[in-house]
Image 1 (cartoon, helix red, strand yellow):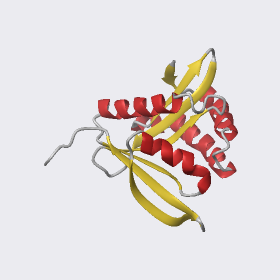
Image 2 (cartoon, rainbow, N blue to C red):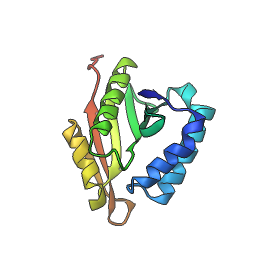
Image 3 (cartoon, helix red, strand yellow):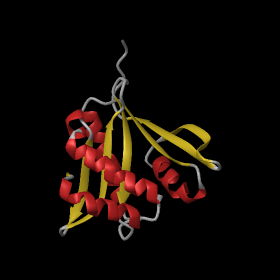
Image 4 (cartoon, rainbow, N blue to C red):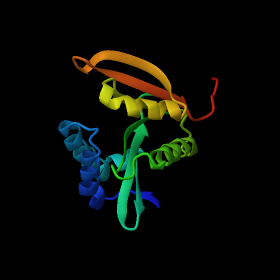
Length: 161
């Protein structure tokens, strides 16, 4: 079952994220700050957070928001699925939910950032599998040898002004 995240989910989401093995310690701690800010104020600014729960256990989540100073562009900031659940389609279902929700909000473009390191190759393949286009690659962005890879996908209709 997909449901909005609550403050009580913070520790569970941070632990789930850490246990995936994909995120650096700094990123995991940043997630805690992001969730605290979401519950304090960012939910008012249309930031969106949802968890997938089965049998009382959170198996995955998404966090996304409109991109400031753009016309209906959104960013997917976080998507994670528990290590035990990876490869079973939950990540794809979460991503498809995000796309539909953004369409329902009137959004038109979804951007996703990730790392260029070999460790993130499965992540990059995942986005390509779901129809995302490699929009940018900035070498050495995060650190020497760790570039920024940006994926994009049009999720809403085009409006010509």
